[in-house]
Image 1 (tube, helix red, strand yellow):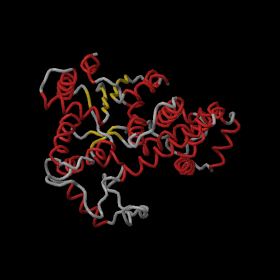
Image 2 (cartoon, helix red, strand yellow):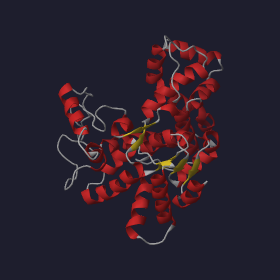
Image 3 (cartoon, helix red, strand yellow):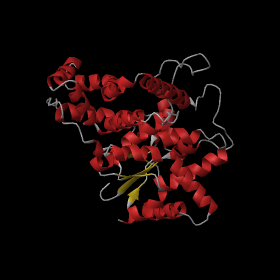
Image 4 (spheres, helix red, strand yellow):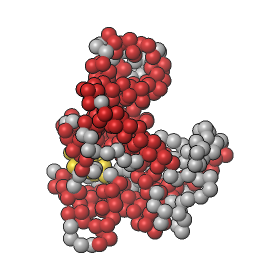
Length: 350
């Protein structure tokens, strides 16, 4: 991107921009919207979308409201997008195997994530040839789990290629805004799956919070517990990346034991920027029992785990901004993290 600044906005900040422009009243948010439009037009910044923006925008069942928000996103992002956390994590694992654990890379050294973090469109945002569409044998229903994942057949892929070739970014617009006069809620068509994932995630985190609250002595080992959970979370990807480098899972775990066990595990996790963001956010939020876990925390952290290390400016909720600053992640990654849109004009001018 050369000298362009990457500006990441949480979903609620996009909504704040929409409201400010719609009202037209003088405000710091309107000034931020104006500054962003001027910076995008001048080519000095890029304001990418993340998978979370596509998902959450479709949660607006009122099509007019959904399209109004999508128009602001389209104008400012120009459909630039960030790679999803699962792809970023795999890239970071490959680098951590060589740079932190000291293994030799087999063949070509893994590319730095910065070289491919930015792309264009929904396919890049979801790292999928089917964009935001995910195929399953059956969608979830009350008391019934989602069916197994399915690979797209060639007929579907050919159809998508034809749609992607339509003029005026029709495919990109539909992927973000959906159809007119359509709630995007249909039988055998699940646009609320993230709600179930978020509910399950929040329930697990609340269970951990309750456990810590009823067992105060275990709070001393919170960091080790979070590290163990995060190591399990990345284990499948770590095993696959290790195999690509001629390593066995035991090679990784043996090296971690040799390097100091629990402290080496934390070092390994912190060596991967996206994992470090998730680790620090979770452990610090769990230290404050007054902060409850919400459904949207899962999708927020998935997006912020990429944005905080790789963007220049991140505008997010006050709680997340506070936690990232307490963990000094803003200093580590050289990212300006704020909860106030009103800071954007000055930040963009520097």
